[in-house]
Image (cartoon, rainbow, N blue to C red; front, side, top):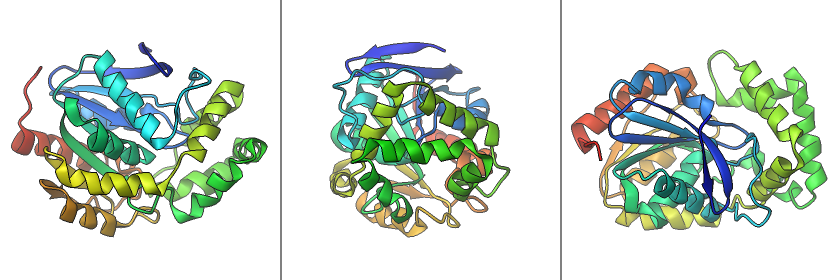
Length: 280
């Protein structure tokens, strides 16, 4: 995998295609492979880049002093765009990656041409209520490590991650994410820092600042999602200057796995009819 060195540390990424750049962000205890099928469908027309963010399933620890709060992760993504020399970027987020994408758009919009938010954290739903105890548990790092260790067992993986999908459960992929967390104490340290930094005050401020975001935004949430209400996409649409609201039915949070063709088609149509990006 290619990698880039940032002030915060080294991150890996996956890349396919050529054309106007689309950068994909994933959620907590996941990596960029979530987007593989969507990227396969879009890479014939766009340059697609999936970052492996330091959210607990990454392979190389960040520097010990790296800021991995939500604001810090937004700065990390902005640094990645600059290091890759990308302009006119469409930034796509999912799950906690949607929160990070909002932070980038709210505080670091310079390299963006468009924003795509799929089902994910926003407003006071960061993290979702069922996962808020994780933030408290992160005050005692051993509790987070113990909790993730339980995910070595398939029933626990399905119980924890299964709420994110309405399709076949990608158990081998999830098991690989857990193995990455367990493989290196630095990765565990990073994940605990990220967990402590999940702060709904940041997402609420980001939503307010997005009222000044100058570029089109596609809001592609799943109405059947149990964690991220479709009503939040509708609320965002009232705040953004140039919103495009598109439901992705028959899906939960992982729209890219449950409905990859719908997701890719919505993104492609949005870009070609609304943004009409050009290759930098």
